[in-house]
Figure (cartoon, rainbow, N blue to C red):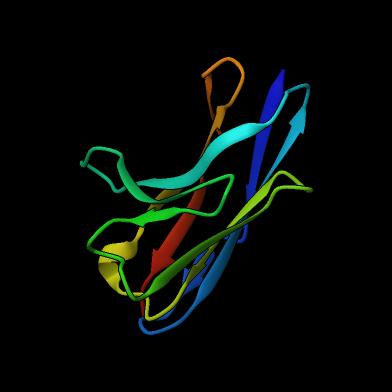
Length: 117
């Protein structure tokens, strides 16, 4: 069983920063891609950023230049540094991981990010 546990969400003012973390635990081989998705009320879940085990990353156009994804393979942890946050970044952010050996996808429980005055 694999668990992804997110942390770091919260309330931040426009222009502020947050750093999300997601740590994997349980029994697994290793993860190929790890990433972050978000879902705002009334909208579909969308990719924010993802990163491969060798460090290749991909970002949604809406966050490019403001967000940086990184990972620590030894700790099976992925991070999302978000700067210059805007109200439209308000959403539940979900961690995602794809197991290399099986191709199975795992999701975290989500962490709320609210950008508001």
